Structures are given as structure tokens and as C-alpha cells.
Amino acid sequence: MRDSNIPSKKFRSTRWSLVVKSRGEGAEAEQALEDLCQLYWFPLYAWCRRQGLSATDSEDMVQGFFQQLIEKRILDRADAKRGKLRTFLLTVLQRHIKDEQGKANAGRRGGGNVVSFDCAMAEEWYKEEPEGESADHLFDRQWALTILGNSVAKLEETFVKKDKAKLFAAMKPFLNGDGSAAEYETAGTSVGMTQGSFKVAVHRLRTKFREALRAEIMKTQPDGESIDEEIEYLSKVLRGSI
Image (tube, rainbow, N blue to C red; front, side, top):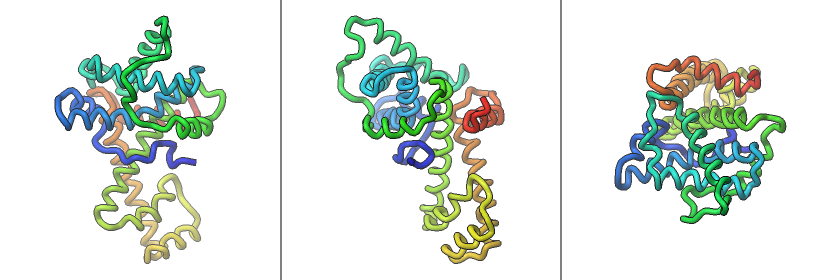
């Protein structure tokens, strides 16, 4: 099973900041758009599949969606003050699908691929998704997992820069909850720490993770909207309580 249900590629600058950068010209704008595509293609692909589209048609729709973002400069109309980034992207995708299905040559487009992804790999990931989940709920859950995965990746990057990648790898399994005393002792020993010292380090990591998560969510929220409410909503989505 893939880690956090997200693509393995490391994520760079994020969210609304990417949208803003993508509006410019030159290499930085192109990189921002590429990063945005790589970051969100799977939640969009999974939404298409759950709507009943085939794997091939889902790939085609997602590629066409990103192509429209570029050719029509749709991101120029995106505004962080007007709503959540996930809502904006999903709305644009829905309109794109409706337009494509209304054409006589629906399902085929020109221009080549905009974002590179392995459709076979995407299908393997999609098969892991629970049956009976609505397309909208699946999209929100995958969005939440992407946000979580990116927060973890940001933390890992800080540890790698300090040559503490092994320590992060040992602590990462404890991010989601407490382990047993034996598990803490074993993990601590693997990095030359006592059980007590290791537990303190994990506690600090969780604090940093919460800070990273809030920072990531803030970048997807409209101005003035509650970060805590978004965290609560995404938490409920992941727990399956809504």
C-alpha cells in the first residue's frame, strides 16, 4: 500500500502560492503549474473513476482538464478570497467533463499529455479505495491525504537537511498515535536514544507536524476562513464520520 495514499514525488511550493506563481511567465510559472498538476492529479482522477468513467476516460479527462488550465489560463480567475482551492479545481473539472461529454467527439482531445502519470499505477491505487464511497467524499478524502502527506514530506525535508533522516524514519510511525513501551524502546535504541528521550522527541515531532499541517491548510483556504474548521472537516472525512 502506498504511503499516505499519495504520489511518491516530493512536493515543492504549494497551493494558492502555486496558483499565483503559475500566472506569470517563464520558468518559474511553468514549474509552479507542473507542481500543481503533479500534486492534485490523483484526487481528480479518483473522482472521475468514482463517477463511473473508465480508467482511460478518467486519464483523458484529467489530462484535458490540466490542458484547459494552461490554454485558457483558467487559474488567472482563481481567487483565494472566494473559496477553497479544492472546490475551485473540482468545479472546473466538472465543467470540463460536461463540456467534453456534450461534444460529438467526446472523450478525445489533442495536444498531448500535460501532466505525467502512470495510469496503471493510478488504477492500483484506486483499487485500494473503499467501495460505496461517493465521488465527492472520495475526492475530499484524497485531498486530505495529500495535505497530510505533503505536511509529512515538509517535515522530513527539514530532518534530511540536518542529516537526521534516520531519526525521522524511526519517529514517523509514531506520528499517528502512541506505541507500546517496547516499540518506543526498540525504535529509540535503533537511533541511540533511551525510551524516554525518544518519546520526548516524538512529542516534539507531533507538535511540529501540527504546525506544518496548519501551514499547509492555510495555503488552500480563502482569506479569513477558519483553519480549525477545515482541519475538523478533513479529520471527519478521514475518520468516515461524514
